[in-house]
Amino acid sequence: MTVLGVLCAVRGAPEEDVVMSLEGAGPGVEVTRRCADLTELLAAAGAGLGRIAVVSGDLPGLDREAVALLSSCGVTVLAVVDPGRPWEREKVQALGVPTVVDLVAPDPDGTVREPGGTGADVVTAVRRLLETVGGAPGRLEGAGTTTARVDATAPTPSDPGELPGDGQMVVVWGPTGAPGRTTLAVNLAAELAALAGPTVLVDADTYGGTVAQLVGLLDEAPGLAAAARAAGSGVLDVATLLRLAPVLSPGLRVLSGISRADRWTELPASALEVVWELLRVATPWTVVDTGFCLERDEVLSYDTRAPSRNAATLSALEAADVLVVVGGADPIGIHRLVRALDEVGGLSPGARRVVVANRVRAGTAGPRPGPAIRQALERYAGVTDVVLVPDDTAAVDDAVLSGRLLRESAPTSSARHAIELLAADLVETRTCPGAAGASAAAPGAHPRPRGRQSRA
Ligand SMILES: Nc1ncnc2c1ncn2[C@@H]1O[C@H](COP(=O)(O)OP(=O)(O)OP(=O)(O)O)[C@@H](O)[C@H]1O
Ligand SMILES: [Mg+2]
Image 1 (cartoon, protein in one colour):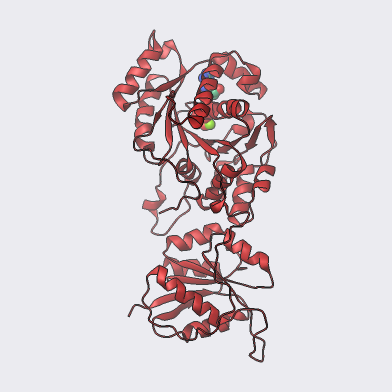
Image 2 (cartoon, helix red, strand yellow):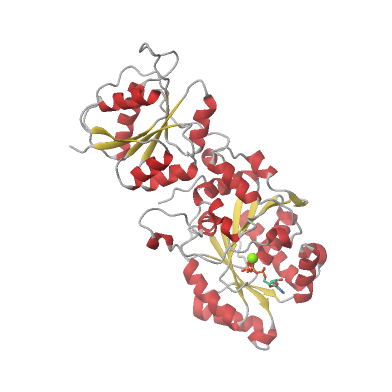
């Protein structure tokens, strides 16, 4: 018979009741570790000691990342909460805990206060979980009449999974060599805000995010890190998210990025997934500036799940509805762009792909740079619709110097005009999905299903 290991990290008086009930549950279920804290629980899960973790809803440190870590170890979490503290249930549900059980400590004389659950209710919930986690423990005993609510289906304000968010995520990515990701993201967001309504510009570049500097928000605390922190603790909602994103110009808000590269650990994928989904609810358009690096080397370097250096970029790519891949329009930039298109392929399933060659100029691409770049990209990357953004040093430099958007500081500039056309194309293609735009769908693209995407 398969023995189902249960890891127990329950705090205080109810712990003994839970453990005793599970130990009396019958063959097939075994409490394999009584953990003093989250660290011990994660270590036991990483060592493969259990398939189910029974945890207190108020276990210190329990957040989305911890739940995701347990899940990545094949451990399903069951949280026990005090029914006298309803916010505790809401919190653990918002962290993505699938099963929540009310639990009250027995009085010293052995009776249970009403209303409340007992260790027996935990056993009932564990037995239900067995059906989904695939254990074969046989019949469990000790599952008496339950007063517990064993469900986690009600959506909460910070669990956007069931909310009807249909905002578009436009993710701007490009290879190393500063091809103009930030310039494009900032000005594309500005044009979208002017053409199509509320837009949030997000800086998710964890190597050298410069969105705040570029738009003149120098003293801004990193809004994205604060949003990720709130999402990680299960308390992020649309109102909070918008509060963290100050208004830059009519219709345009900015969620600024981390100011120092060594703060990248503040942006874990488990929290950002919630941020992306809430942005879909909060605003019709989101434009995300990302870092250049796509490596997942931690998978090779550690035999346990390690924090992912490029989680912000990778999770944004995964959530994208439109992926804008930008490369420099010089021989080296085009070479990198061709390789980058190969590298990024498949990381944004379902996204429409737009390829941009930035800083197009005669000096580096021959007397007729446009046709030369189109020809090279078609030949080496099979890209038939490339968006060309001219090199417009005077206008772009002036915008950077004054901390303004191109549409404000140089509305007639050629770079602004090209970005405005791209924005119009994105809006038109969204409104009329059949419209032929300036770009092509990624090979194998399929419509993105609404709601949170599950991760493998
Ligand atoms: N179309 C353009 N015309 C002229 N200059 C441009 C244009 N696009 C970008 N630049 C300039 O190129 C430089 C790099 O641009 P940007 O910072 O947007 O690149 P990036 O890809 O975000 O770089 P990083 O890797 O540092 O994040 C900046 O000095 C910017 O002003
Ligand atoms: Mg940048």
